[in-house]
Amino acid sequence: MIAFFDIWLIAKVFFVLAFAVYAGFAVMMVKQATLMKRTIRLGLDRLVIMTAWVHLIMVVLGLIGAVVIL
Amino acid sequence: MPKVYESGTHTEDTEVKQLIPPSGGVLSAFLSQPKWVTFDTAEDKEKVILVLKRHWVTNVPWILGATLFIFGFFVLLAFPMFSFVPARFQVVGVIFGFLIITAFIFENFLNWFYNVFVITDRRVIDIDFRSLIYREISQSYFGQVENVTFTQPGFWGTLFNYGTVMIQTAAEVVNIEFEDVPEPEKVVKVIISHMQASKEKTSE
Picture 1 (cartoon, each protein chain N blue to C red):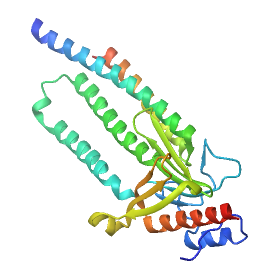
Picture 2: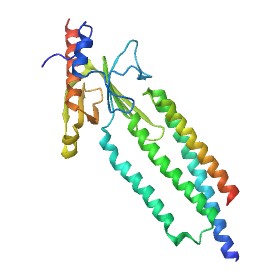
Picture 3: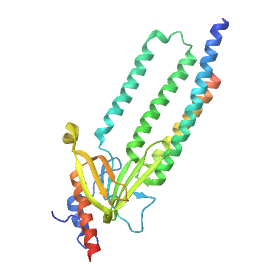
């Protein structure tokens, strides 16, 4: 029973760490999209920035979800 | 070779429009004379003639990859091998998987959409984003361009009419390559006509 519990605790830590690392990547994606938009405006820039932000918000919600649900 | 563009003449617009009529939407890989495109290093009254991206067919490998990834993900979910995993872990796992797929698609789209080649009425500019926050902008004025060639290698390049335009510049200035751009022959013609116009201007 203790071993079973430990496995899922390890799995939870793994998921939380994975989401945390991924959140850092999502922040970089927002920075990248902003840099791209600043360099050249090609007509879809607002949508691109918005998508990057929505992705980041989803990742942060996922991270919170992993901490709370698991 | 007929002149397709001569800077500073009244026929300039007509000649450009004859060879490359204004065309292309925001997702086009061959965007001619777009009014809405601006870039941060633009000079006063500089006019964008062409904006080129890699041909859409070069996106097929990552689109296929993403499709297979999604398909594989659903196949994996359908297998009972994960039935021993608690439901809450399955839910978080699915969310994580879909976020990864979203990021993969978005990142590839960004790489295609923003890695562009711009030809203005004064110069050629190659804008490259090599990693998440690293950008490289190479440019050369038409007066510095020495030679322009293009290659159309392989079956797909010939079939879909795309290729690589190589721009050799003066020794100190970096050479520029427009990779896998649509209609490379037209692109070369536009650059050569600008080079000629620039030389004529200098010799006057």
